[in-house]
Length: 170
Length: 146
Image 1 (cartoon, chains in turn yellow, blue):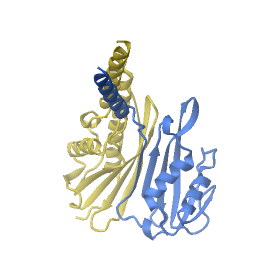
Image 2 (tube, chains in turn brown, orange):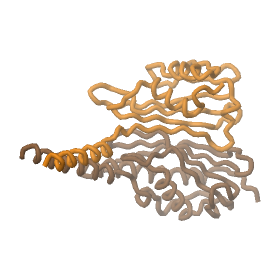
Image 3 (cartoon, one colour):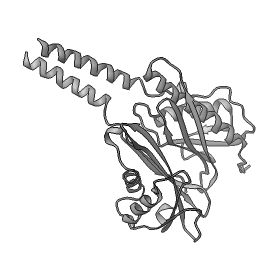
Image 4 (tube, chains in turn purple, blue):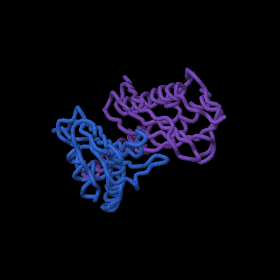
């Protein structure tokens, strides 16, 4: 009887930990940047590719970040169009890199723009951002901190991109 | 009854394993236009905040892969194909451990980063900075590249 109760408690505890881990993956909507101020726009079509992410607890997944980035770029209008990878005149590569810290998340992302036909890099910048949530629950606090850092990174990255002197082939 | 019990335990173990899985992760990749496969001479530059001489550990791991690598403090004084820089992050869990190492390979011809990689390990499966470097470099260059 005691063993059975222990097994039930163990199962419940595992389910809680599992649930917590599942709910700790940052979402695309929460990482999207809204009302993005930009300095200039580039009359070219560009594709967006995100690498370096990891679809695991307290990590940003490539697909989620790419969706957030794509939506933010379209919203900001920094490129005339966002197209599929391999098409368009430019490709924006975003590499999720150094990011660490349990509650005060710091995220460093490499932003790189290259010409599609030649693969020549024309602009590159490291963007570092921070996010700090004060949510009561630890799991939510960590996820939100990361989402805030990612959202800030997208905002800063697009702003830097809008300042970049891309020599668009007109 | 024992069958129900063992099933519950197995279920719990699977759920627990999924949720508390090591979480070790790594990434290594090249950017468009990368000449990494053509590069033969590398320089690992010591980072100002590094007190553990991680540049020497990275050099050792690159040499084990058959690459020609120099390492030192300050900018490279010779002609190299690429300069390797890094960022090391630490966390506390009973003792300090290297939680993440990120490497950047910068093409000296263009000045841009041409390849990058990172390795992240939680406390339970911790590795030394050299262990992190080994994981990243083997993924970036292959087991024995040259």
